[in-house]
Length: 454
Image 1 (cartoon, rainbow, N blue to C red):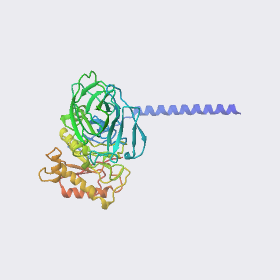
Image 2: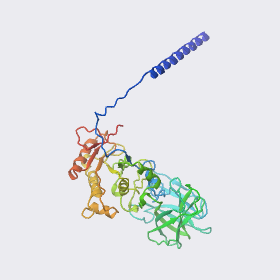
Image 3: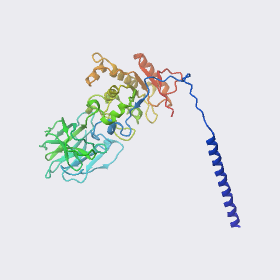
Image 4: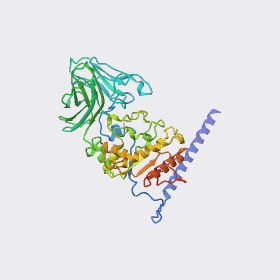
């Protein structure tokens, strides 16, 4: 009986397959015979669209979009504050290849618990030093690099950085270098910095620097020569000439930048973006605004002033340290350079996990944005924050006109009542400021709606 049953099932499957093929054919024929018409009546426009706020861009530190992206700084982990403070750095000798790799020997969620040892070098060792181990550059820097040189029998020993996925070098080009350094009493030599290939071919070298036992800032211009092809297999090296211990922090190498800004953008990317003629730039954006906790998001007051005074953000949503080297003034200057309206997106206390400060604890968040408006627009002679802006290099007001309250928060519980607090406070102090809401308007007042449908 098994064979007839199997034969019947085979015939049944064949018939079903033929039906399916026939149905598909009918659908395809009907689709070919059906036409659609879309009619646009230009005499009946819908909602008004801002003649200014279109064709814009959002800037957020995500996927190395800023550090390692359009920001020109070439050094990766420039102040040894990444989750692994030794990431990107290695020991090297003149003329040698990359040098000893650094490996993590103890792991922890928090960067302050990391301990690191060098690997495979008899010439020296690298250590990430905390404030409990040595004096730091300032209170906003929590690690520095210690280079112990134990032998210079084959030449100076150095610490090398290969940038973000390599360093591109162009011949006959000036690279502006700065770093902080000091020594222990057992070091009696000098420091030299070089730009070179990963196999040790030198393209630019500085004069010698003589460190002391106190932190000093050293600067120089390195002009490259002898580069026959553009590639990324290059590194920046700081060499010590004798045995002993050296300490380094806040290491920077800047190539030529857009409009020659001292803390500016890569020429190639900035020129391409400028050609888009953006009308607006919204920043800081995304998870720079809401972070992994209520109090760990973007703080503009930590993103102004000297680079060495910027602590950056450690609990970065995307898993790496956000240095904020390219900070508030740099963003606002970028808007000026491109003729774009800046839209500052302010935190309203929401964390990425949808936690929020209690309603009776909102005043510091509101005051923060009021201070920001004063910093951006205040008089440089009479206003506290305007004076600080001038001291940071921009005497003229930025003429900030737009504040977006919250980032993609419109669907979250508690958004509307918190928005109302910001709206009322900002409009009372600055009636002409344009307030942007990222929710369906409802009964709440707003000048502009920035709806986020998802």
